[in-house]
Image (cartoon, rainbow, N blue to C red; front, side):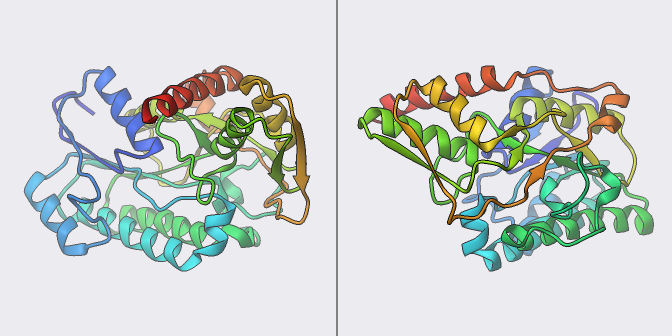
Length: 312
């Protein structure tokens, strides 16, 4: 991926896309193409086609997606499967038809079966039932993987599929109705501290185990893989260690400085019991995560507090 080549980042304002843009610019890439959702609706086939015809990107990072936590996935399954199928179909097909040299498709570890052995190896894909609460999103992502593999097989394209674990970082979503667990807990504990609330409610039992990867680590991995990885088979990106939701809540409580109690609402769903990815494949290629979880959360919380003060 030469420095002068045109690189399109689909979803450059999101958690992952913005991290990829920061990393590319830091590494000296200057011909970066971006469009906001108001400038280019990626669900619109004609609009995407016209964009690719006009700009002719050489490399494509497909980080655009409709994403959310358990609540959003459970409440809006039709939106999740429709929007994600449209976005990825339009971009993958246009990348082929307009001659992009390579495309990186970002999937998710929710593609793996709910009860798959841990840690999750790439070969566990399609070996069991999916987690019901995010099945629509997972099926869309599996379709994207299959589409990349099918285009490689039929058309000789160089489309790779990367499966990151749970993400957090700058430009995260802190909306309690649609966010993932880490930013949601940060906001809950911050607001409880600010308003001197006696308790903070956490969904589920606190027992599920989750792995958390900083967006800057993922961006670094994506650039590494765009330059080093050529296989059609999926590849995991993660830290290689996990933490229980209970311990995560305790860590965030400590970072925020909240002194009240944590109440676990066991009437709410836990989701998958454990979701830890096997990172042997990418580690063997020469890449591993670097951002420590506590250090990463502290930096995100500091930014969140600063942003909250600015918005006042």
